[in-house]
Image (cartoon, rainbow, N blue to C red; front, top):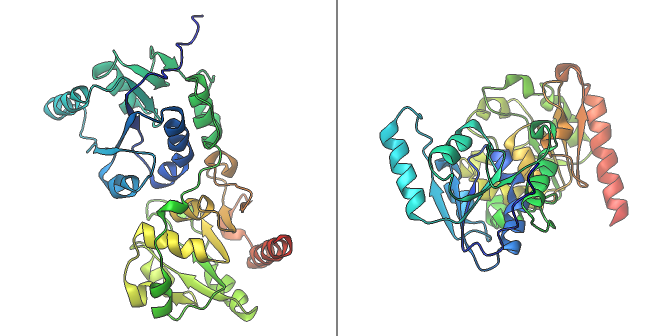
Length: 324
């Protein structure tokens, strides 16, 4: 076996590839931080999907955001235009944090003469794990960067607190008094199996226990949120941006949610919280489990009792209040 290529410490123009999805982009924050610390003077650009352009433009470790429309690969005209765009930038190091079939194609057809960290066959700085897809997300990212020779301090501890807007006026307009608990009862309409169906009963128990309940539903959860007791921020403000949602999470006492992007945002902004998982995907592999954020993982999510969730929420709130 050939020895790994040396760490590209002299790289002056770096491309990071991270297309999505939202939770994965959030979890890559620590990796972006470590790439910046290891290349303090480099120009660092990220290649991402249109949906995450504005979010990544806020990232303090990046200099540029390049949008990839992810056109079908049979559209050779679009592929040729992207190839020219990337080659004209003269990147001398690529960190492929997406590691998909698409990005392996980009390596083979667009940038195979550049130093490349990832799982693309033949790249100069390969991630050497036997089966990266079975590794927990944050450990997988850390292992890849370590294989490329980077010093790792942040990858396993992403912190997106820089994403949060000041939401004082928003909360005052909705008459939200702190402390409050945020419920995230929905998820993408494509994944109904990820929805725990008992948030209404949980909200009632938490309100009876003296807590203020807040929701900030997305477009797929508006009708669902209307069936759950509590304050809907959308009633007075409309749909929240990711930055406003981050601000709401940052000031919350606690967050309870499904396996969905907003729950990952709450976990990596430092808020105390709890995510509810069924048997469709191991929670440990998603990277959502943090010191501040736990999970309840069951075989049948619909059968998860309200009392168990309520008891875990109140236990965690009490344990946290006793530790500060």
